Amino acid sequence: MDLSTVIVHYRALDTLPGCLEALEAAAEGTAHETVVIDNDAKAGLSDLLARDFPAVRVLVNPDNVGFSRGVNQGIATTRGDFVLVLNPDCVLAPESIGILLRFARAHPRAGIVGPQLRNRDGSLEFSARAFPSAAAFLFNRYSLLTRLFPTNRFSRRYLLTDWDHASVRDVDWLSGACLLVRREAIAAVGPMDEGFFMFNEDVDWCRRMKNGGWTVTYVPEAQAVHDVGASRKRVATRVIYERHRGMIRYFHKHHPTHPALAILADALILLRAGVMMTANALRLR
Image (cartoon, rainbow, N blue to C red; front, side, top):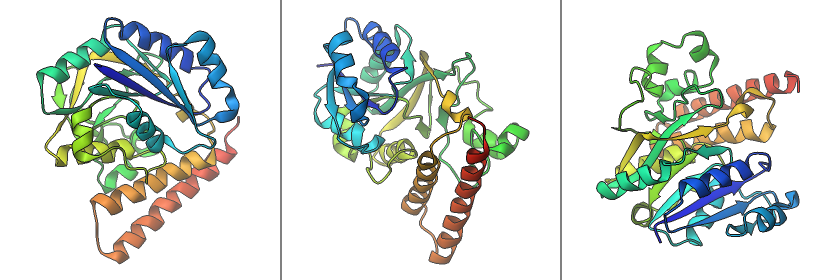
């Protein structure tokens, strides 16, 4: 089998049908299978899929086990030569899967290949980035400093904004919203690190791929629309917490330092999380 698609679902019944419809169109002519890992057992997803998408398998978890563990469950129960990790809020363009597969087959050391992602309004999502440095805490995609000073050198370095994102390029990491991953590479470096509940697992996986001698490549001819509107709404406190816990885990794992400095960095990250939780709580629904 050529392709196995793994989608982790949690409270995404409004976007999942459109994602699956676009996926089926994009995968036409490709030997493929699709599995949805349901982390929202009370949502009634199994009934919806049985009615509207009978070819899609669903594995239901009694509790929300997180994104990384869900992806790994999907990888373990599929058999395609390539695994497409796809968010339920992503809509693939019709030819995207064929483009990604052709590129991966033509480049045997391509461990992860990803498309160009566009926001719902058509603007570019900076889904191909450099590995985060300490400055990424203050100059990431959604930070106030990046919005106020978009051309500062720290944001430019992290988001690669000096590059037009219109050409094929090996990069440090790609957003986990849509990743085509070679199963051979997964076997070599391992699946996602389940210590990341959600957020930063994609950075970690790409880093491990590159450390293992595999490339991570951005292929903009393939495209998808990624509806990340939730980043502008009030979000669950746990989402903010897990984002920052993922930052801590990533830097402890890949940038070990003196314990005193690590404690200070952890404290600053948690302080930032606290500020964001407070601002989120005050935000109007």
